[in-house]
Length: 371
Image 1 (cartoon, helix red, strand yellow):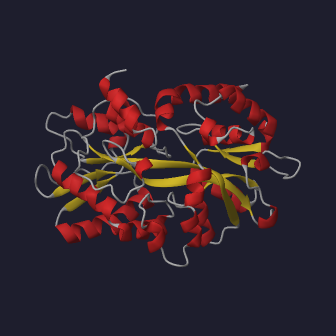
Image 2: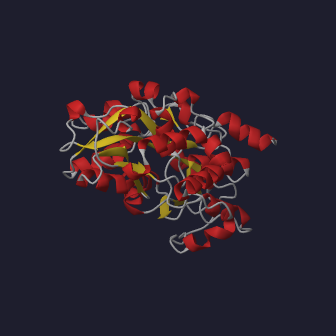
Image 3: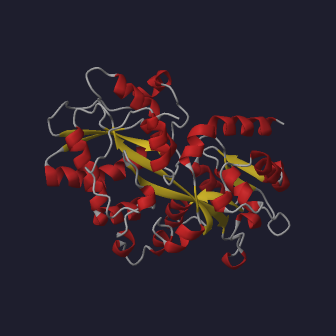
């Protein structure tokens, strides 16, 4: 193992994984279709601008309105926000002889591991104050700035909260709970395989490396005909909310937002599976000073972290968020990464395992589906 790989694997074992619209794009050549979705950076080197590549959609809107507008107001530094972030995009930036067009990039946690191994990001070197960030989310070249939880959900018109499943083994109990189960397709994440292993008695501390034979055997016990596979995290919300699947897996943040909009969905945080996104500064950034200034702004502003959490229902690993949430945000408060009970009981996905083994995991899953 080379020095950079060892550094990434040693320092990042606690960083956690999250969904990505472009997960699995591993080469710069495959990034081209996504470049059309990017907003062209407005200004270049040393001009008081930070160019931030995110994922787009409502998440980008929340970043803009809660973080970036306030940062611009307080510092005078403009934040130019685009979409289409991926590891492939990070590689393209480093290949640019004129310097990176995008200074900060949002990466899945395993994408971040790869980026550190391939020397695509600048080391933090004390330029970011992590004193308020949970240590297991902090890395040498950035940090996991936003987290979410894959949880057990149910339609509370079809299953009462008093009789609801609390653990994955309950979801697998087809005698007690009739109907199909919503599970997330194995593409960039293996949440359903991890859930299958917990249903079969595997403890979170024993999860990695994944016992794929055992996970597929567990899915067979549940029954292929009892599973409705979702290709996005929103699919489960629709399946559970409609009652098409009375129970299954869903993202807590999506479920919270859906409940705000009237959906009949409840969930259990027992045996939640935690994932995240990471931020880092591209190695050849022309605006690295401003980029690190923005990242430091994000890590040190608990007030804005709380606002972002209330807006999106995603967790921010800032130690002050819980105390700064409004009194009516009890459901969000319980699902924060800083929740002591959750930190003890949840599974934190291993991005180093994902980075190394995900192609094999996806292939095995696809072969199993075709049997």
